[in-house]
Image (cartoon, rainbow, N blue to C red; front, side, top):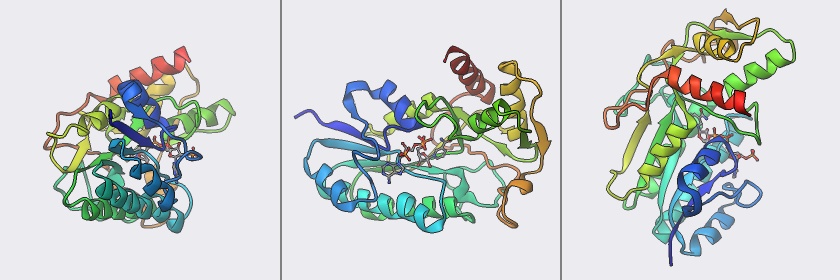
Length: 278
Ligand SMILES: NC(=O)c1ccc[n+]([C@@H]2O[C@H](COP(=O)([O-])OP(=O)(O)OC[C@H]3O[C@@H](n4cnc5c(N)ncnc54)[C@H](OP(=O)(O)O)[C@@H]3O)[C@@H](O)[C@H]2O)c1
């Protein structure tokens, strides 16, 4: 039997680019087809024995701590347990927000210290995956920010959300004092697919860009590339977060194990071309 790669949350942004990367080798169930918080359904799917790897793209940065813990942490732990029981490997997508208020760019061996709900839930997910698959195959892939088109949730990410605000004629503000490592989702998908090779080591991998960019500079570049006037207005990161929970000035990632994907302008140019062609 040919084994497949199961991409959970397969109808989201990364799922879309993984489909382009993996094609027929993958299966891309929607939440309706496989809800990762349903441990029995996950166990039944893995018990069919046809899965070589799971790439877990199911997750959320929305809702309170409880729902994020359920989707990002407890579900990842159950998924890892089912993978261990049925001989599958697991790629778990995590975030730079596990580094909380430390100052990046962060490498794989920097100590996480999450402060917000999303970072906490993803970090717990990482630990549960590592525990359940300690004798198996797992990769934890951290991403800071990925650009790309997702027709099913066109305004799910920061830059598309800002574009949507502008389209409604509302003012657009972006933090000028926070830098991130921006990659294109297609590049991240290629790395996620490479993580499914058995010669890649277990552990944490950062999807890093060659350079960092502030959220304001990124938004201004994309707006200019799309010919949109007026552009965004610079703001402070602290304006968008609960007191004490603002991410640090540099929340980007670097990698000590994998080469950087590209620079942020290349990622933004690709995104601009996709938007113009859509
Ligand atoms: N994009 C980034 O910049 C970035 C950066 C760091 C980490 N990540 C993480 O990478 C993963 C994939 O990101 P993405 O950008 O592809 O997100 P996305 O576009 O929001 O896609 C996530 C998908 O997961 C599905 N989903 C949510 N809860 C689920 C559940 N309980 N069971 C099954 N499916 C569920 C969603 O379905 P619905 O549409 O029905 O909700 C959606 O299709 C997420 O865990 C995200 O936190 C993303």
